Length: 450
Image 1: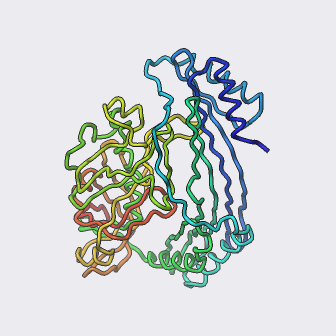
Image 2: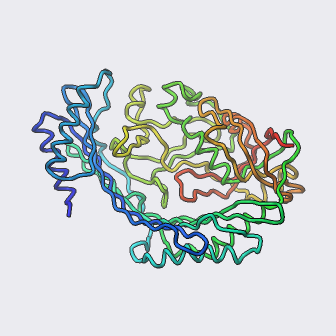
Image 3: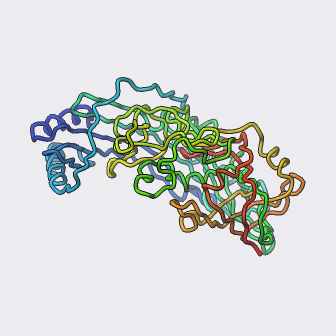
């Protein structure tokens, strides 16, 4: 049995003796369970435990890096050799610093969890019951494309030769995720749809509820048709809005701005969105999938508004980007054992407003509700903000959903969309992601259809 604390202590001591100073160890341990049911049978079942570690350190003023999944004397020697060899290859004068640490770190709430008491058999039966419930909910459900269950938890450690010794569970309390994707058929019409739930307590999820909801969403899209091309009033439902925010989240990275890969460089203090728009980055969010007291460099995390009432308050910074901009890190340095530090959001979401989705639709009257966006990688330019995306949704007449819509393309610009938002809904949702969004009244949107 590996005693990781002892191994890290030995590694840092050996690094110092080898002339690597200062030095830092970043360690990630993960345990996970995943299974998938397909047409009444367990199609896939996997239990995994992984542990990986990286050593980063300064050698003659240059930073070297090496990683391993082995934890013995040979691994220590390999890591030290790897750091020295990679440092010797560094040509840039700019080096990532090893941070001694902040004076204090915030507390992160650990949600109540039942994951340790849930058996593998319970999880497998859950997946099978989701399928059974979905098939029974509507005779038009033709087949399942997979019902999945996943649970897990991890531990991150960051320890350095300055005496900093940080540890956090990722995510706090672990996670449980379940969902199903279906195919529905009605004559010549076919549709796909699904539903998922996520949380910290496995037994709070209900396989019958998930299965029924997936069947309802799938059946609702049967006999969908395109609309005429034109400009439509539009509400973007929370799931589609979450996809957009995830796709364009990089524009709020100071790293991207400094590389001219965002149009927001130097625009702090400017109005860039409608006054109803507040965009939060909250690493202390209770139950958040990216909640943590420290970032990948050891900086203390803090809650902040990136956009507040339409005004850009800050970009997201690591220590390197903050130094270049003459400001302080926002605690948004992210990394893995095998990849270098980069800037990324934590729990990133539009702060919800007061109106329900039904109220947003009623205020709109007639138009479209966009529920799904596709082609996000090929059809979105994360620098300019332009997008042209395959979409699905519903016609809205008199504030009520009507004919399902598919085979349309919606086009616009994310920067402009932020300015055009008329109202933000109250239905904030994250699912199994660190990116969350409520539904929004997007004003008008260009649609290419029939």
